[in-house]
Amino acid sequence: GNSVTQMEGPVTLSEEAFLTINCTYTATGYPSLFWYVQYPGEGLQLLLKATKADDKGSNKGFEATYRKETTSFHLEKGSVQVSDSAVYFCALSDQEGNQFYFGTGTSLTVIP
Amino acid sequence: DAGVIQSPRHEVTEMGQEVTLRCKPISGHNSLFWYRQTMMRGLELLIYFNNNVPIDDSGMPEDRFSAKMPNASFSTLKIQPSEPRDSAVYFCASSRGHAIRNEQFFGPGTRLTVL
Image: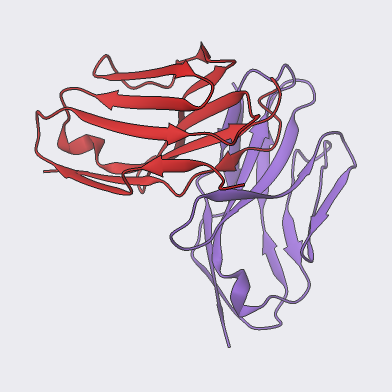
C-alpha cells in the first residue's frame, strides 16, 4: 500500500545551519508529494508541493525535489532561523487522488 | 477570511460521555477533512467529505465515531461513548475542488481529554 516514512526527530540546529529532513515514500504510479509545517499551537499549513517526477517545490527558503528513482522528497533549507522551529510533515496523495497520507512528523528546534 | 474555525478548542470529559466537535470550513471550499493527531499514531485521516457527501470514512476507528456535514458551512464529529484512548487533538481541514491533493487549510484543532 501507500505510505510515507520520514526521519525521526527531534532535530536541533543552531541558527544559520543547513537543514535536511529525509522523506521516502511507497506508492504505485505517480503520487503527489507535499511538505506541511505545524507551528506550536497551530494547525498544519502547506509549505510546498510537487506533483510530478523531477519537480522542485520551494517556499520560504525551503526546497524539496521529487525523486522517483529514489522514491524520495527530502526537505532542505540552506540557513535555518529560530522562526523555523516547528514540526514538519511529509505527505503523499495517491495517483488517483483518493487517499492522503501523512508521515509521523519531524520536530525541528533552532537555537540562537 | 477567518480560516477554518473549530470549537471547542479544548474539551475535557469523562469516559462514557458524548463529545461533539464542530467545524466551519472556509467559505467556498467544498472538501472537508477530519484528522486525529496523537503522539503514538501521528496524524490520521478519519473521514473526508466532498460537497457535503462522505467520500471515504475508512479511517474512522470504530462505530463510536460518527461525522456529519449537513450543509456546506458546518460539520460535526461525534464520539459516543468516549473512552480515554480517544484523547487526542482533532483537526478539521478544508480545500477547494474535489481532488484530495489540493492544498488543505487546517483549523487550530480541538484538544480532547477523556478522563
